[in-house]
Amino acid sequence: MSRVRVVKFGGSSFAGPEHFHTVAAHLAGRVRDGEKLVVVTSGMPGATEELRRLATELHPEVSSPALLGLLPLADTVGAALLRIALERAGLRAELLPPHHIGLASSPAGGQAAALTGVDPVYLHGHLAAADALVLPGGQAADALQRPTWLGKNSSDLSAVAVAAALRLPGCDIHSDVEGVYDADPRQVPAARLLPTLAYADVVTMARAGAKVLHSGAVELAARHGVTVTCRLNTGDFRVGSVIGPTGDPAYAVVADARSVVLTGDDPDAVEAVLAAEGLATLRVAGAVVATGSFADVPALLAARGRACTVTGQKLLTVLRAGVPEYELVPATELAVAARSRHVALTTVAAVA
Image 1: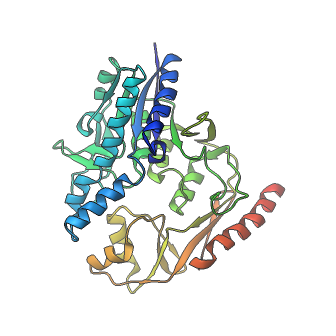
Image 2: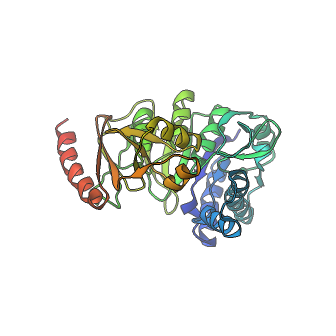
Image 3: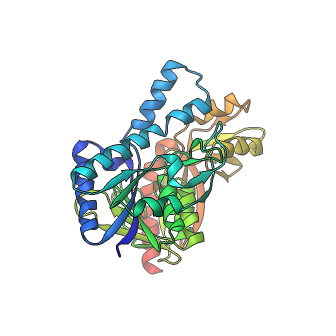
């Protein structure tokens, strides 16, 4: 009997047509080695934001429900194109639309939906007749079978949820880096790969704005005992980091260039608005920090009637054996501060 494995490929995996063929050839090799695959995909790089641009060009004040009805199409197109590449590679491939994936969510509305469960019946039925099922990431359906979106970068969540529903011991997450580093290599050239990590440490890093896995995906993996294997999305597709119940003590620096530091009269209300929009926040030195944000946070708050001031600072987090220490630094000093903290941290880690 074929082994079933869930694999996820992020948007950077599909920068052009040749990349679809590279991924398809790799997956065909895995099928020949005895696996059946459930492949979760994201859209091509920039596809989601291009749809957002077109929507706002048509209507500068486009409603959230209308926007959320459009943005998931980027992932659907990515999945459909990969299905075509898999067919050319000789596989029996099937594309499942959101209402046949089996992922259930809260009702469709003006914000990202919350995942509420997974029914594996659909998946089992379709797997029987296919070598590979291709699923658009971050998509689900509500109780009325209306398609919903689980939010930005939620393909990781889809992959873990499917693996958990199928009662699989693990899943593979492919991206343009082979794993989790102790700092962003683009900011800190001396960053080092972390081979094994505990779920809790990766959640802490993600919530601090690290460009690692979706924090909700890791939390779900922890609840269901799904080991997450991080792999490269091209070349030899090598394994970099493995995330599970235990791991090496995490020493890392997270310099969140996308963070937005906010001050105002009612931080609780600001946090509530951002949480309702699916944005992660931390409270640091009395300020509300929106971490890892792609959104126009000040505009979002203004639209909800919440006044705030953007300080111009960024969040810098240092993990010492998994314990986070947060500080706010001027945006212009973030990269220099990250390199400085990393030098000090690696000395401490070596002694530990």
